[in-house]
Length: 170
Image 1 (tube, rainbow, N blue to C red):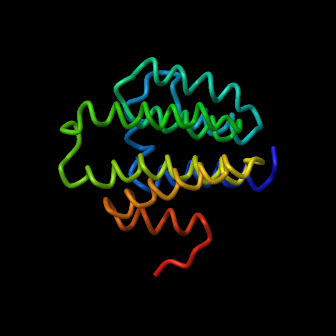
Image 2 (cartoon, helix red, strand yellow):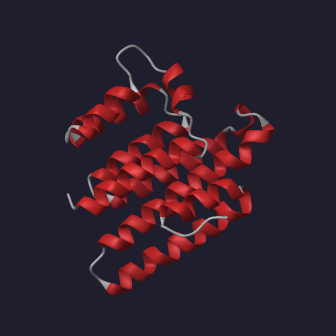
Image 3 (cartoon, rainbow, N blue to C red):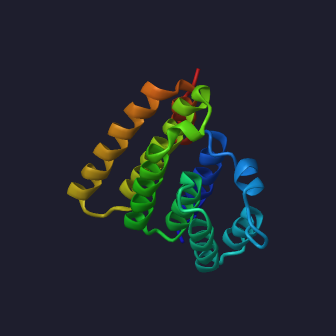
């Protein structure tokens, strides 16, 4: 894997964790043998396929938990599988929208912003990896659309997204 893409994929994982996808909450909902720490260890040790298997198990255990799809999205990014990563973003959005009342009202904008941030990060990484100019522009448009949604929903998440790109943040 190219060094810059691996670094961005790891940054994406941290971005999602910091932007409202609480790993503590997800870990507290974990079943025995179902650990974000183990998934992270698989990724860190260069075993993304094992991480993907664990991410699949986590989703099977709680298919209505949108954070589980965002976790698998991160693994798909590490595998350069941007199509699957986008499918996970779509599944995360669908799972969240099916039951937003499960989350405190004051957390909802940040949680929804985190999902759109995941879309934006996926598109950003895909655009950087894309060789065909036309497709790169399509990815850039997806990025811009979701970045705008993030900005509308939650300014700290938007600033985090900008910082991931290396932009200056006030």
